[in-house]
Length: 429
Image (tube, rainbow, N blue to C red; front, side, top):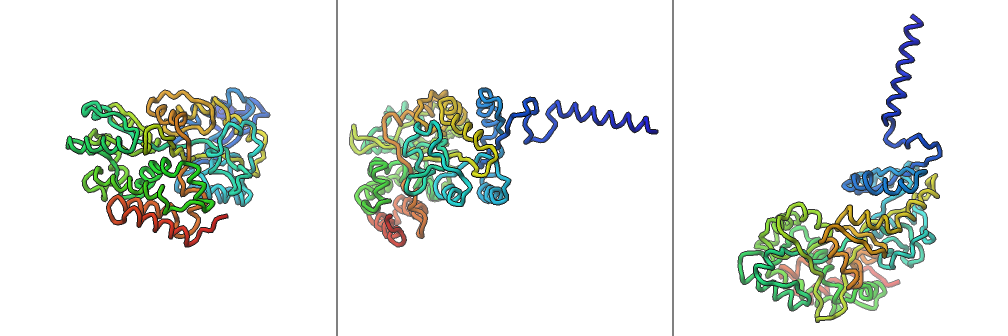
C-alpha cells in the first residue's frame, strides 16, 4: 500500500512540473527562468487594446529589457474608476496606472496615489499642450506621462468628391460652397452628423472648428485667466458657423445618434463626416470607398491654423509600487521613438504625444497626424478647470451647440448663456 501511495505522489509531482513548464501557472506569474526578473502590472480601462499591449508593445519593451516583465490588466471602462480607487485604497493596485485626462487623475495625485514625474528622463520630448491634462493647476507638477491624443477634423468620401468635382476646402467660405454643391446635387447627405446624443455637436462641431476662431491655446488659457469671455466675438463666430450646419445634416438629424451617423456615412450615402480620429478604425473596416480627410477650415486663406489635438490617455506610477525603478524604466522607454511608432501604428487614430516624427502605415491616420506640422495644437477648452462647477461648462456646450444647430438659440444668445453659466461659479485664479 505504501509503495502505491509513493508512486501516486511521484506522478502528481511530475505532472505539476510539466504543467509549470508549459506555462500552466498563474496568469500574473513572471517566467521563472530569471530569478531576478521583476513583474510590473498595468491598470487600464482600455480593454479593447489588450491584444496590442500583450502581443506588440510589451514584447517590444521586454526584448530590450529582459529583467522586466510587464502584464496588461484592464478593467471594463465603466468600472475602471471605482475599481482602481478600491485597489489603490486596499494596496492591491498595479504598478502602473493608465490615467484618464484632467480632474480624475488629478484627484489620484492629490490623494497620494500617483508619483511626480517631472524628472523622468525623456519628458522634454512632450510639449506643454501634451502635458496639460496631467499637471497640477499651477503647471508645476506632472503626475502622468502623456501617452496619446485624438485629433479632430473632417473625413470625406473621395468618390463623391471626384464625381462632383470637389476639392478639399481650406477656408470657411470654401467649406460651405462644397456643402452647397453637394446639397444642390441632391443625391448625398452633405454633412453626416446627428444631435440626438448632444456630445457630437460640441465635440465634433464646436471644439473642431472653434480653435481657429479663438486661436488655440491663447484663447483657451484666456478663458481660464479671465481675460476672455465665452460671449466674445470668437465664440459667437464659432457658434454662427455651427448654426449653419443644420441646413446640411441628414433629415431628422435631431433623432440621429452617433452610431447611426457612422453607419450612414459608411454606407456611402453621405459626403463629409465631422470626425474624431478614433473614427478611423471604424471606417477602415466598414466603408467600402476611398477616404480622405481635411482639417477645420480657417477664416481666410493662409491664416494660421489650429487643431484640436486632444489629450486622451496618460500613464503614471503607483506611489506605493514595490518596483519604482523598474516602473520608471518602463515609462522612460515610453517617452522614446520606439514606443511612439509602435503605438501609433497599432492603434490608428490614437497618436503618441511625444515630438518624435512617426511614419504610419494607415494613410488616413498619417493625414491627421501630419496636421501637427502645419497647425498649432490645442485641447478642448472646457476640459481643464472650467467644468468643475455647476452648471458644468462641458455639458452646457453640448446643450448650446445643439441649440444653435436646431435653431432653439441664436449664436449670440447661446454665447451669452454660456458665459452667464460660467460666471455663476467660476472665479479666475
